Length: 279
Ligand code: A2P
Image (cartoon, rainbow, N blue to C red; front, side, top):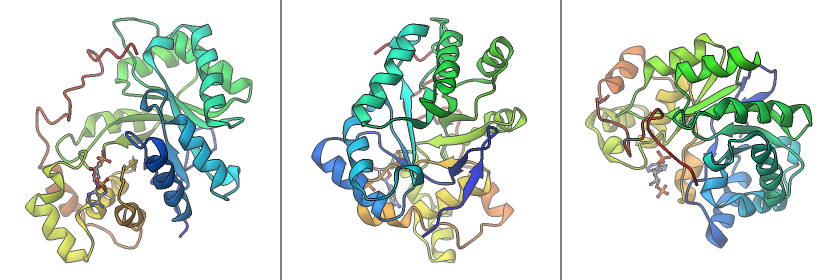
């Protein structure tokens, strides 16, 4: 199965769906990731804070798929926002993965109260020039954080990975990213296995299109121009989460899913302006 791609603002191509690897760890995680790659995943999203860069890299190296055909992402933890720390952390991430370069590296959280994300961004810009990273981006950045790094460095992120699922539709931030030429990736695109998957509207659409609930929600992301990164430990779910390019929801159906949006819909209440991740 060939996964369609979106072209980023730096010219590199990102597969339109990727595997989230939060909590995929150890020997079991290794097998889950390697089977995902063998089933057709060509984008794998990790983070230093997921404590799995070692097995993610090992699975990629052992998969038999050439390195240049897999889009590998990881993320910088909050404790390394100082410029020198960030550069060292990127090299450490690569060493743990056993890879020479990342396709994408993101600042995991902006930590605006700490006020070092511009420094961290400068380190990503340098790492890109050194060839350690092809595309550089951010995660959980609010529009004002985007504007600050763009105005202070002249470099626009290629990607902003944010929380999006039916209880947190996040339309405004998706539009703000698009306005700046930034592709939006969604973390926890299925609402982390919450009741979003059993909402009556989702079940109804699953029946109509002869798809499962996860596929309906992933299609909802795709048609909004968002790149979802569903996580699954279940090999059947993993496979089905790639099989989302042969049907189309109507605009009214997309709007019907949008009505599930909630004021307090964030999974863990993580407001990027408040959330402090110093580990
Ligand atoms: P499982 O590991 O058993 O597949 P998110 O990516 O939003 O964090 O959601 C991950 C959760 O969604 C996991 O609990 C995962 O469970 C579940 N999940 C992933 N894909 C599907 C699917 N196609 N149908 C139902 N549940 C899914």
